[in-house]
Structure formats: C-alpha cells, structure tokens
Image 1 (cartoon, one colour):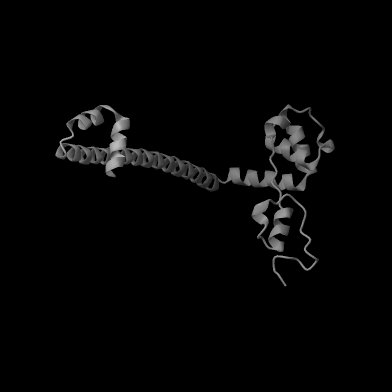
Image 2 (cartoon, rainbow, N blue to C red):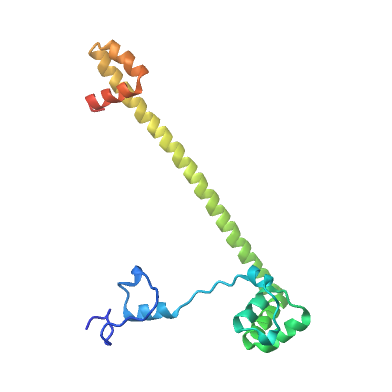
Amino acid sequence: MNPKRPANGGLRPAGPLGPEFEEATYDERLYAAACGLHFLEIPKYTKSPKKRIRDMTKMERWLAYFANQLDDDEKGELIMSDEAIHKAVDAARTFLQNDAERLAYINRELAILDYNSDHRDVFEEGKAEGREEGRTEGQALADKRWEILMQRLLKEQRYEEANKAAADAGFREKLFQKYGI
C-alpha cells in the first residue's frame, strides 16, 4: 500500500493546497486542509457601524476586544459574553500587574529589535564591502587584460592598432577576442 494514497481509493481532502502538497502524505494534506489563517483588519472594523455586544458574532466580539473602542460598560458586557475573551482579559491584567514579567517582555522585545537592526546593518555593510571588492577585482582584471594586449601589440610593433585600441573600446574588445585575452 502506498503511504501517500489513502485506503479510500485515492480521495484527497478538499481545499486549495497547491502543488507543494503533491508529495505530501494523506495525513499532511488533511492537516493542511484543516488549518486556516485569519487576518483581523481592525482599522476596517472600527469604521463599521456599532452593534450591540449581544448581537455580535464571535469574530466581531474579538475584533471589538482588539480594537479597544468600547466604553467601560460595553467592555464589561463583552467580557461577560465570551469565556475566551474573559480569560484573555484576566491574562492581560495578570501580566500588567506583574512588573517582573512585563519588564522581561519589554526587554525581550527590545533585544529582538536590536538584533534585527544589527543584522540589517551588518548585512548592508557586507553588501557594500562585497561591491567594493568586486569593483577592485574587476578593475585589476581589466588592467591586466589591457597590459597583456599592449605588450603583445608593442612586441609585434603594431603601434597604430595600439593607438586605436586606446581610443576605441569596440576595437579593443575585438583584439581581446582575437588574442584570447
């Protein structure tokens, strides 16, 4: 039995999984089809007309919580209307009351910002150094090619071609190709 095909005759879970899942096992495809990613567009929510808390869907209650646009009475009603939001508010209150936890969180966020900033700066410096190195090496190679060409032309006493090569980049390139330089 092929582990990539289910025993049910090859049926796959429905969903737009894309070509990267062609080699996935049935269980991996099933898991991917069950997962979902939701974007909460809070700025759009705050512009929509207000509903009463009891008339809101679960998603709208979470949007109201994150948007932080409710007055005290509405916040109280929101907290009482949904157990998960109640737990989230309790966790936030506990976190905000614990100075050590809050300080550790702030320090961690600052450390991440510093790390990202340093990483970005070092990356940019590395790119600049790499470009400069490339220019230097490229110029050295061009100088060496020019030197070899001039030595060959002068050795063969082809002074007119040497003058023309100095003035005309296209002619110079033809000579490079002719001499295999």
